[in-house]
Image (cartoon, rainbow, N blue to C red):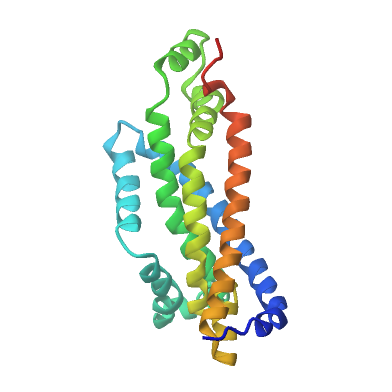
Length: 232
């Protein structure tokens, strides 16, 4: 068996372009997903059923359906409705990039909301009692104490979600975007070298995963230092 990686070397500009597309989709999806996840997470810890149930239903449906189905529904499914095609949103919904970012943001928001809700529920009672003793209002309690503390503690779990979302962005190639996987598919179909094309894509994802893991380790070292065991 002979491998020909000379073609891959010549195709590196295509792969690097795919890396930029992947990072763009990932960052937009994470920003949008986190913006949705914070209010959803707060709703999930509410004692009011009217507030809690809609957030629970949203996260249950999104986490209970495959990401690929969600992407197809947004990119292909919405186009069949005349009201959508004539609406002001059609220029956006007809864009593969917008649909991919929207689908990924919706998906990660559900998982991130549950991570944040679990972190909020795990808040030590002492922090809450201390804030109340200082006369903080409920809004200030969440803004100054609960939410910052929960976000810090959620870092280890959220890092896993970010890495999973990085890998999930590979589905963007199915809706015509030339991300890392899209670059590999292009090289594979053009030169009939699927092994070389996709092993190269895997290496790019591996490098990006390593970088993300290191960045989150540094963040945890900085913001979770107070949770580390004290030396005698």
